[in-house]
Image (cartoon, rainbow, N blue to C red; front, side):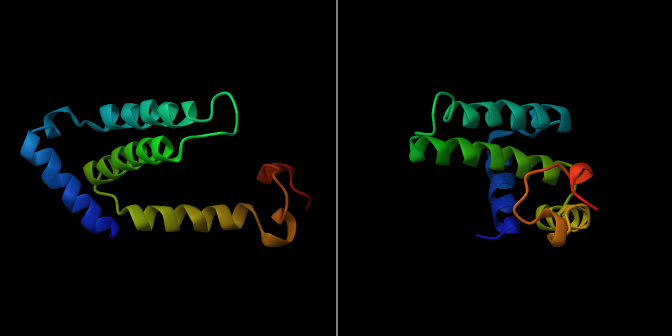
Length: 108
């Protein structure tokens, strides 16, 4: 399913329930964080996890991300590609390969 199809389906879902009135950018951003915490909770005590629970929580995070992008009239695919371009410049393959260091700590 493409991003636009996902967003169209979400838009219809929200409209049917008249929930757009609650979907300010601020509220949607809060919801992203809340759902992200629930996703993190799946891994709280160890690396074991229930994949169905992880899948559902990840879907919640992605849903709110899509709703926020739509509210701000942002193309989800394009903003990811744009950010990847910036990240690519900060983390050149020659210095970043195999390293978890932050870009400002990579060797020159």
